[in-house]
Image (cartoon, rainbow, N blue to C red; front, side, top):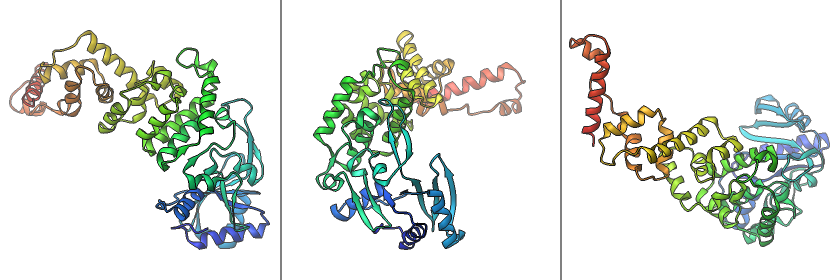
Amino acid sequence: MDLPGVPSSVLEALQGAARSLGIPRLALVGGAVRDQLLHQRCGRPWLGAPDLDWVVEGDAAALVAELVRQIGGERITGVQEHGAFGTVALQLDGIPLDLATAREEHYPAPAENPVVRAGSLHADLARRDFTINAMAFDLVAGELIDLHHGQEDLASGQLRFLHAGSVEDDPTRVIRAARYAARLGFQLADESLAQIHSTMAQWPWGWGQRDAALTAPPALATRLRMELERLLDREPWPQALDLLEQWQALPLLDPQLQSDPRRTQRLRWAQRLGLPLMPALLLGAVHPVALAQRLQIPGKQQQWLQQCGALGDWLEETPLPLQASPSVWSAAIEHQGWPPEAVALAVTLKPKHWKPLLRWWGRWRRIQAPQTARDLIAAGWQPGLAIGDELRRQRSAAQDRSR
């Protein structure tokens, strides 16, 4: 298999080290295989393979040591070994590689972290999420391995879960399905959609109605957050979120997100204002702060959500007239001590008074008094409270002139 941008010398070095150790299989797996087949056989543009993932039937660390012995340390940099199975990351001739010992897994209970042990390449491929991601190119034998008909699904543009229990084992695969379907323009296979519906109907998500600690394994919330972050950061998120809604899958996160007509508008505003998309998405939940805590999003973003809620309450209880001057709006907002990010989040909700909030965020808060305390003292003012009052007066006047 030719990989554009990857020198043949890299593949030859890996192949030579594997054969010297008698390793039966050393296989390129995952997205690189999928994308190369899409490029080669389906005419898709080649977008590059920033990470090359390899599965070794044997000791991955021993393979790296043999590689160093054969070609020398000059061509190999950044070696990092981690994990119980000796996963090794390195760069060979500047190309990032990840080598892992082949493993198999089983789920002790739905949605819990899997129990993993060393296994064969075939067992390792059976761990994958979709048929199109369960193919491998064995560098030792020089053959493509496709045990689950991934090539057929690539040709037909189908996204298909690997097993009948894929979603029950790991519900985060639903979010992954939306990511890939949006990125590749694939359709979810009928039986895979049925699997989502079946699991959603049976699984006690219930975060909006019951104690989350009783309804979802702790590991699930973390994995959901990680998949959601990838969706929002790397994928065409409007299409991916629309797919999750279409599949009736957003109750994975919160029941109210399934019916959230302002979602796309809110996230586009967040994008425009330079905010992370996660808190903007969670604003559509029944209890945004509680959901943020369950998903363990960054603490600063949890604070923004809490402050955004407080700001919304303030707007309801003590609204200023829309025609109030910039200085009056600025003084009121700044008196409450809300950070700019919380105000920007409130803007994404488009409340009645969103325009003054936006103007404060974008312009009014940045306006300073034309003079400084040093200027006033140089002009004869005595140090003291009067200087602060004068600087505030000048800043207010400057804000009002900016209207």
